[in-house]
Image (cartoon, rainbow, N blue to C red; front, side):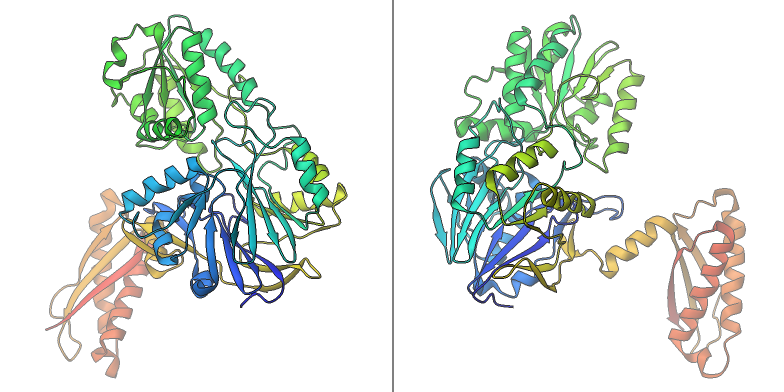
Length: 550
């Protein structure tokens, strides 16, 4: 697949899911990649750290890839960069804040000299093959959230990235209604648009409103120690919390390495200029209880983050009965149980929990329906391509766009190769768009034998059967049975005894050449032990047979 005189779109990640954003545009023989993100593993991938999009499609076409343009610095848009950028071998492009965070990732990976990273001032247009690209600043829950305006010989794309509308953004200056309307006046072929909050009937809300809510919530906690947890990347929220600390006469303490890094990078880019001096975590308990505000990582229930360690009394910052934790963040789907566990530990200690359901202390960084409709009116695209959402989100946005007068909309998912022009939108084919996982230092297929086996082990446990046989198939000694993850406890001895008998009998029952066939002997033992394990446990354990000839 080499793009002809046409404009193509292909999502390798982020369409049909929220996270792991990787988008490709094809035009006149060349490909452009927008974002290179990852997602965090869920229980479906036991022991796995991170999940990536499978880049096989573009890895087979590297001679035609002109570059990777990064919209902003959230992990689901840049998190895969240190793992794949060197092998992809093309330049990266980002605005200053994003570029500094990416550079730190490259340094940590030891590849900063091997990867070309270009810093683009916000309004500078640059050319990559047949693509002319300009950043368009939009509000989001991180500094320097951007849309991309992509000019091609076959039409203009407005690729929103993650965005919202905000009358009081606190950090940065988003494009105005007039500026976005002017873009629409010039003509836009396709709007490729964030779908995350399409079911929200209200606007997302303003960071200015959050400032007022946090000021009220913290100001009400007279004589109490207050911890606020939020997304480390939300520089606007950090700015607000610094101002809240000063307005309520509290010393500010930061707990969490990711917060330290974001603050340092933000200040180097000209943000957080008047951020208050910080109290070191080791000195936080010396500050009078009602005069301390702690900003902590871990609002998504991460077990090693600062909030979890504070809750477990394994951190220099301690909370007492009557203290307060403000969750100035939303629950990312899939994290509800982990967040609930930490909240329960805190409440059991007598700590009060306040979330955005009780107080105006958080707003989303993604557009609700009124914001989507407003953008449609300003940009007025010929085609709507929903991305960044599960299928239900994208289908809902496609219908919303049609209802609001956009002439065409297409529902696509990862792997769907779409022609946008000429005569688009049209699905041309389904390309490979799988997943890869990071397991320790190994990047492996998400559906590979190792990951599938681990999932089975986590669900059903493992039984090992070891035996020695003569060349004629006769057992030399009893079969040895051991198990891991089979919770029989008091019945284990009886189970092992029965499994030995069943395994030995399975060997004796083999006839003719099968008695001398190692594969047949091992399979007979495996099936016999598995049947025994299923009778005793009600599960289908994985059975490993160790066979030795004597």
